[in-house]
Length: 334
View 1 (spheres, rainbow, N blue to C red):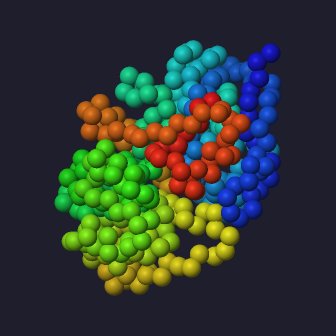
View 2 (cartoon, rainbow, N blue to C red):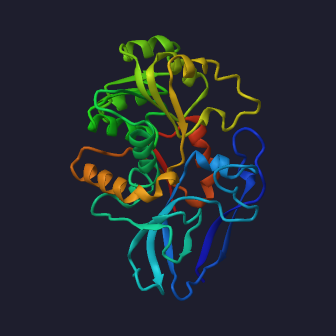
View 3 (cartoon, rainbow, N blue to C red):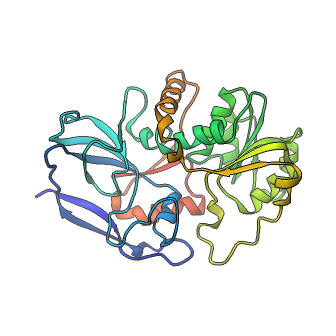
């Protein structure tokens, strides 16, 4: 009999990297759709830094994943069985389907994945939440203007690589911060960034000065910590900072020391705003139209890090996000 392979949250994590035993991975009876529902055979599950917060107990922008619940995850697959009038077998869909091999949907909170535009896995990457995050964070929160200098932290990751490319499409200058010579080289040679700074090279402040001789107008923040402290003094007056993540502190075992340079928010009259992509849910069709057009025109591309091993390696694969061992959008082939 067919079974559904499921990742469930067994307990809350301790500080630090996620221990695999916080998850229980098991086979369960195959779910059957009721009238008005359909079943999706999931092919790829997205691994995102936000998952580290989703498993913690406490106040956040969404409730934590409940103990015993299927791990919250964006995923993409194809309709396998349908009792829904608007979805037929073989349709490709993406959404918050969970870390499991099969999911039941009623048609809400999923989008169709047009594989004539991009491969299936791209609909949980550049054409999914990471792409939307880059689009709204840069253009709405960052209020990008032509000619701006944009600095992007975690620039080789799922969101950062797209931020830099959109900045270039919109006539701005893109500078990426990434870890290691290989990633920095790819930002310039493959993604079209104007410059790249290796934060592991040991002289972040001086290297930022060289890469941004006219200062920084927009900073797209995903890291926090020492990188944020290095960027703040180099922001131009009335610069904008869009905060979509602070990954350097997600696994901290003690309270981080800083940031220390917040005075520049006052002296340079900076605007620093956190945002969640769902703040812009009403504008999602606009973002998808633009992103899809740029992909079709060859102006936007995605670096994807697809890992094998199925759901059994979900915990170990998730931790790659926090060790920096992924290169591009991390996903797991189911």
